[in-house]
Image (cartoon, rainbow, N blue to C red; front, side, top):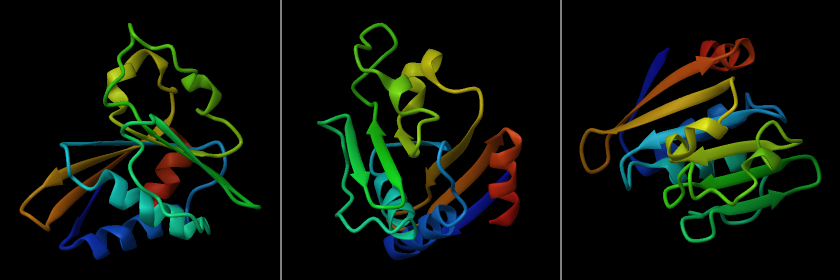
Amino acid sequence: MKIKKTNSAEETIHLGHQVGLLLKPEMTILLAGDLAAGKTTLTKGIGLALGIKAVINSPSFTILKRYLEDEVKLYHLDLYRLDDEGMDFDLEDYINSDGITVIEWPFNVKSLLPKEYLLIEIEIISENKRNFTFKAKGRKYQEVVDYL
């Protein structure tokens, strides 16, 4: 476990960039935190590190946004409106796929989550300040946490 602090949206994007540089295909990142905690802002930084040229914004109403570049695929999911019972979405197609999968509100579909992942819990401290707690489930994810 490791805790990182940010004081602005720009610092959150930078932290996401640091995380993104350590990610590889078939990795799953879970983002947990209240509404407006910075989940999508962190994902923007991850996308920058991966060379994603498209604007990354919240997939709240579409559930999934795919960002496909020449070298990398980023799948960004927002599962706020889903639950295990009402799940008619093929989440398995994106977890441990050929891309990197970032899931906001992952615990709405606990039964579908992979056994190994990087969980990033985001705590709102004030309007601009956030605490990010990184928890690894699995060795390859622990390596990411160790390098941060």
